[in-house]
Image (cartoon, rainbow, N blue to C red; front, side, top):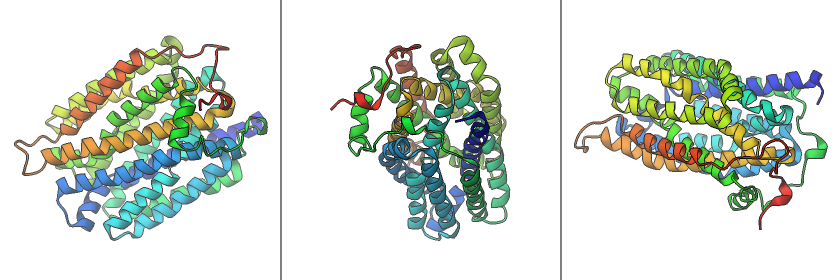
Length: 417
């Protein structure tokens, strides 16, 4: 890929991530009350229903992550991204007209099937970026996600005041705009000589697990990502419900809080990640990020006032380092012909985390916000998150060293049968 075509490709990847985050943020402020209105349930039951919706999403992400990653290694990043964006447009249109809980569940399932844009975008960035610059490049993706999370929740909270469906209509329009941009501006980033045949033995969770074992330490990195994803899932799973239960926040206030989180995350990843990785290395930066994240989880577990919730958001500064650095650690253990597959493995790990998290976090919070609980504790989900964050931190600190320079890296021929 020439410099002339590389720049618009990078722009498209960043715009896609930005719009993906914006669309997620658009729907976040209105989803709790939408579930309560459609299902005719109270808040504690809505928390439980949201957990089952997330479980449906994560289960399909778990199954589809390796498939999408392997397809992108075979056919390139462009067709996979365009098909995924098309599916997401259909999904948001469905959510904009859904008037029953089964249709809301179907929308979450479609998101799981077509939500492979993040992993494929990460593979595209890896295609275009030298190994030593990947942590910084992945931090730019994180910043794009963060900026999307600034605009999305604020806009979603505002649109939600005019109707619960308006954010989904806006999300469909924005995703369609990203699709059109990609159609005209995104040539494929994967070189023909780096493509490889699609193999169903690898494009399934069991085959992906065997492939992961081919590289020493790859499984350990995947485990860290999975544990951290379980912990971090407390925010998308419970934040709007937590704001309502603990502080009685409105849709607009929920949107504002999410926008502030996005602003802090985006600014941190733009200004800090690259510098800290160059100075301390990916592993130390990820360790520092997890320590900040753990402190933040514990802070939210026991927060009592709205202003405290905003003050604790300073913990997102170190926490924002974790995602990009873990992605870089994983990517640097793979060859150029397996970037899609390893990002598919990461998506699979996130899918496992997404399956486990709603089975633990949502029921815990639902119970402690229900009349049956011996005492009301809206921060119970953050205690669960803290346990998994501590486990992820402990595994990261004992992670085997990855290849340096010309060391051995994972490639498709090394699959263990």
